[in-house]
Length: 249
Image (cartoon, rainbow, N blue to C red; front, side, top):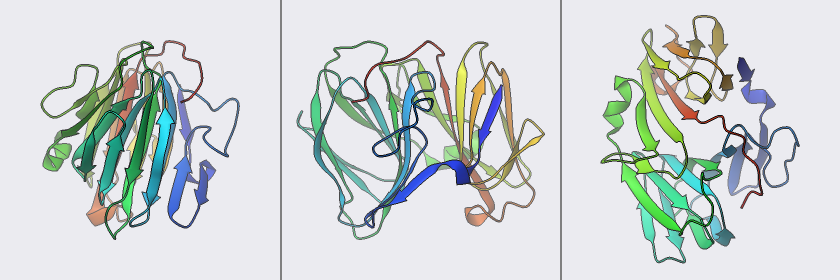
């Protein structure tokens, strides 16, 4: 099944210092039937103004991934970790039994990022944090894994059966993903316009929830002027379909 949700239907809010789009129930936005998609429970596209951010606050029992698209994001937590991440970097924090952290834009220019949360496969984990880095030019070679269950030299490790991929496409080119039967995929169009599986037109900001699909083909339209420099930029999450539940921390 292919469930396309257009950009205009996604909840958005502007607090002045923070522009945010919530793909799932989060904060003041709540829909009972839009809380989870497999282990995925938060998918926020945030733009944070310069020298602003989220001050110290607690989390527990959650895998939190930050994908920075532009600008810089500074992380600091109660376990003693501190790092600044820019485009080409991924942050992964396992809140586990409990951690306090802050996410601040340390620069004068806005920082744009995806905040993606998953329920972990196991509870009572020891809190942990890492920053990984990938080569942005490698995004043009197809779906590049940047978060995986095992991690690696250029991918962060996550405590769940989840892999996050990024890809960039020039006009008229395509990339394919072969999924295992029974798994779920979540596709997000970060920039540009493309066609999914030869028939579904997607635009910037659209999302797709895929269930029991084994072939996923994304083709950049010949005219992708809506994208930066004529480029399609997309994110794909492949994950377990095992039932999830519990409180979001």
